[in-house]
Amino acid sequence: CLRVVRQAGGQTSTPSLPSCDAVHAMQDDAGTTLTPSDPIDSRPASATARGRSGLYAVLGLFALVTLVADQASKIWALNTLEPGVAKPFIGQWIQLHLIRNSGAAFSLGNSMTWVLTILSVVIVAAILASLRRITTGAWAATIGLLLGGAVGNLVDRVFRAPGLFRGHVVDFLDYFDLFIGNVADIAIVVAAGLVVILSVRSPHPEDKGEPTAYRSDDD
Image (cartoon, rainbow, N blue to C red; front, side, top):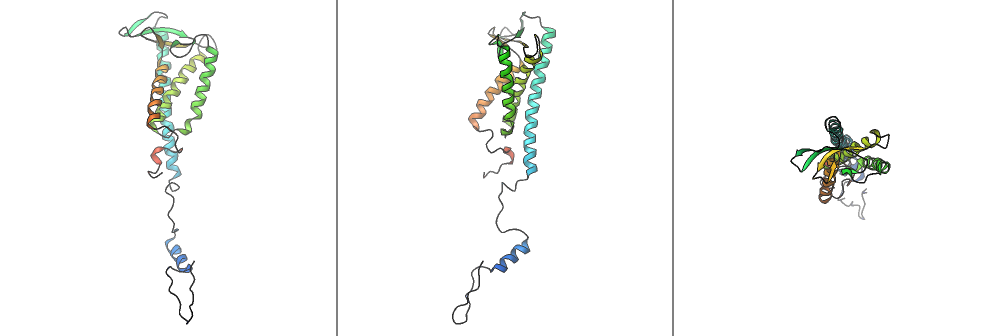
């Protein structure tokens, strides 16, 4: 604050800035502080919450659609196709060929059902733990595909024959007589490709932990 200084000779110096009382008066009249507020701090908390809720909705939608499509297609295959008999689907390149897979995706790694079931649970848990790091719609859709595919095959391993947590995954899409997969496998492969693309474009999906739509351009 500035104070009035009396010089020798009885004259007072002319202050270049308002006195303390004048500054206080300006603040009282305006009703606000004189310092600018932080644009990030002034962002409504409800807006950020809505943005994150929207991302979760996108992720949940993609995961749910993937899971339903996977399980519905497996039910159709079990009720329609004869095990071990291949039928043309897209020419001779992709055929319908129903099998029960005790191994990993695309009928790879048989005789490891218990290990693969535990691994599937760990993968799903890791995906769920990373949800708060997602800040864009593209990443939400990608992780939704990955989650839906992982849960789709996990459901088979937990609940299908021959027993609880020892179930065999239903595969019925035969690719070039090389490997056989299902809709969940397709979703996982597509999600993996999208992860590579998004990582090149935006290496850090979590960035600042806020939905991209509510970040300031000056951040």
